[in-house]
Length: 520
Figure 1 (cartoon, one colour):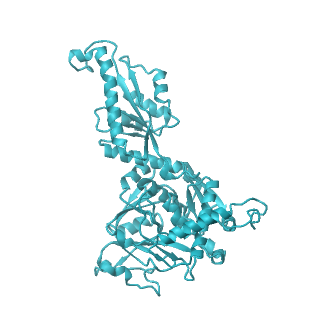
Figure 2: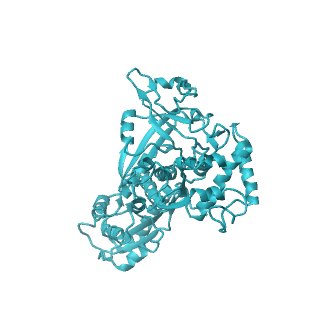
């Protein structure tokens, strides 16, 4: 069973440390009416304060589906301020499950315990927000000791921090399945799509990389005797069974029935659905929750043409179910999509991302691209006066999907078109004009995995959704197209995007794993 990134939760351990004095006395740290300084009063009040703190935590996090609150831990310290081992044993009893220790209502003479907990466990610690008064004293020491410590002022900030830490956990529990033709690094265009050093990525993020040969997948995506595959003769393959072929046909029918427009024969579309179905079996076999496949290398074998199939629909359907999936063997895009998908709860889109050109006359001009290729209606993108809008960017690929507004939400409208002009290679096409005004977040890791690009934009339109090949185009506006372009140069052409503003969560993630943030 594939463990998807969107299903991974952050386990939060709330802890309240009460202070109960053994004796009645007054002093520089005991400032209260006389009756409140007795051991009996404190023994009554501290559990009540603990319950109140736990209720506050529960109230703010109960709607956060990405968080899992562990059973709260209440313990007491006395006024001798010793640090017996039993206290740490109690606080750490769930340590194997804990991702974040959340200390509630922190007051005097508890900070040393929090610092030592960070040191002992190596886990991030947080002090409950909207809470006085020892947060800076404690967190400064946690951070000075090289550990992660957080003390947000407000609950909305605290939740963003938790979401960012969850992304760290997601990446550490993610495996990427790379379809390769030659060598262990997928892709032919290594200058833009591959990390320089995958082992370094594993060191920084925890993400791991697996590989399967292109020809093995192409042999096994055909129905037939699973021990007669040319590349693995005598070994049982993952070829679809007769029963699975019936399911594949049903999926194809449902896909066609839900579309506004279908411009393919059922048997041609079914070939693409079959490839996606078998890829699921490979992902399950290799325990991977991300996927990339090569395009130029696939074309070069001529098997795409012979089998009449592309990986476009595989990527679209993967993304719809929470499996980040990227074209052109773009491992960087796949990991970036995992971040965006896990932050947003939405499927993501990726494409060749470029700026429009401006020459001082107030008009936008498209550079050479699918927007200007011979044979296309080159003025389509100008509808609604887009050619008079400043700071436009565009992105194009044939990997749209129906879940951009949320993987658990309703499907968007879509059409089905072939990738090839001769009618094969199924693709899903979005109508981006339906989402004009939608805020988007774009994200991409750098090839050395030392930086992360975080961009924002607003959808302004779309074009060419019913023309074959990679032509479907989303058009969006950024704050400054020149600045955006200049910063993008350090990251690559494919900039995955998701609906919504997720910049703050991504920045917390970046800080937690030591990435430099580049914003545009």
